[in-house]
Length: 239
Length: 239
DNA sequence: AAGTGGTCTAGACCACCCG
DNA sequence: GGGTGGTCTAGACCACTTT
Image (cartoon, rainbow over all chains, first blue to last red; front, side, top):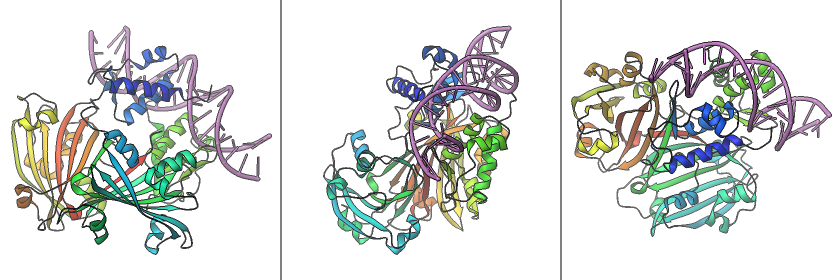
């Protein structure tokens, strides 16, 4: 009928209720039929909200029984990827700072032409940022962003949040990412820009980030001091 | 009407077409309206199939334009977690072997009571397995399985695939998992059971695995030699 | 048998993209 | 304006769980 997204409102209200423990773990949510009358909507709309809750790890639906509330509190956020460093620091409540080590605009390095799916004449930003938590340099982020999509980048923007700039200023919508995690030996640059222990490895997260027009606009290498690295994932089995 | 899952058939047929490159990357799928007549079904059923394709990283839907085929070939499988070692080895085509180092049944160790959400009197299997690839011990898996759900475990089963036993013999359905990845220093046991380089770290994957009745039945620590560790993830941004 | 979630339908209106 | 995907509805039948 309207253009609102009623099912999103319902999803958020129930998710809030689960986080607040107004819905207790191991208990059942009201049935779809009950929710239909509670929210005065159709069953399919309720089911959209419940499916979202299920995908995000809030509930498990059981045919013939109902929707079981899962324990989210025992596990920390974020539920899964695609969160910016700024968001992450705010969620975990840690005091963090970002130092822009360098910001340059040039043609794409040959080694990255394949990763970025672009011609060699394409202009890309290269940003290197040190991420400091509790006084120590913990993460080195090396970002490559296509100038075609992300014009006008400045040091101030990089020091705050590139994602905020992309979404709030440029009004682009970040849609999905492919991520690869490996353990590697630190390079000379890692040693210079991170406060590493001798003989320690680093966790490298390579991120390919896409807009909602299905265009790749960013490739990022996040190089983490291994003792501070932690990755959390929630996965449903292939249906 | 029927109890079949038409949308799953459609999903699998289109996914196959994308993997085969019968649908080319960056091209558009037929519109929902066209697919509706092609498959002689309703639009909502088509949309269910397309949403699955989108969640699994095959397509990106763009309002007003259509469904863009994404490049899956450039990225390796698995798309995301919840794959057994046996499945993984088969997918990657590497020659792998599993050695059962120990298999015991006892009450739950106090340190794991919280992780497993059980009483101290609960009986649990402890399984330690060395995973060998190309002649080297690469992974040490330490599994704890609730005997209440998984009775009758044997060394032969553990050497083959516990997941196969759970799903095919016991007819239980594995539904979802929460995973945590960290980098740690090897323990003495790691050094004994893995072929490690001096001074190297290991990647530890802690897995909490649930059945479709929302009951936790397994906690696993997978301890990986870091130079062979690789984790791949596909994440859509919070809608 | 009653209640629950799972699948499917036919139709409606809306928002977005492009020529 | 015509085509595309996004949301929503009201109703139907099926499969599963529980009483």
